[in-house]
Amino acid sequence: MGYTTSQTTIVFIVVALLSISLWDTCLLKISPKCALDIIGVVFENGTITDACCHDLVQEGKVCHDTLIKYIADRPLLVSHKTQYLKKSADLWAHCVLISQTA
Image 1 (tube, rainbow, N blue to C red):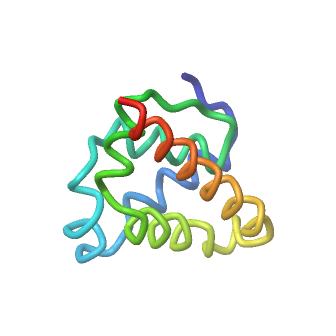
Image 2: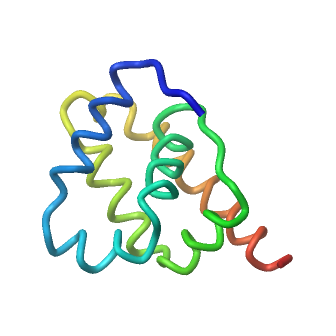
């Protein structure tokens, strides 16, 4: 999956700058590739594998929501925050369904 916009690059930089406590409690539960795929789905038009969906659900909704809101609140992204939060909720619902069928 290729990302071509500078907005995605900015999102990756933001993720790299996440607070240590947020990293310790949430992001260590999923692989870096899955984290980037999740970001790609929410902030671009990426796709996610069933395995990453399982990781996302295992991470938990609180961590997922917190991380997405943290990224969406960045000045260059905040103007589309409502769109990102909807995509995040849609992704969560999709992944819960995937996890329940496995």
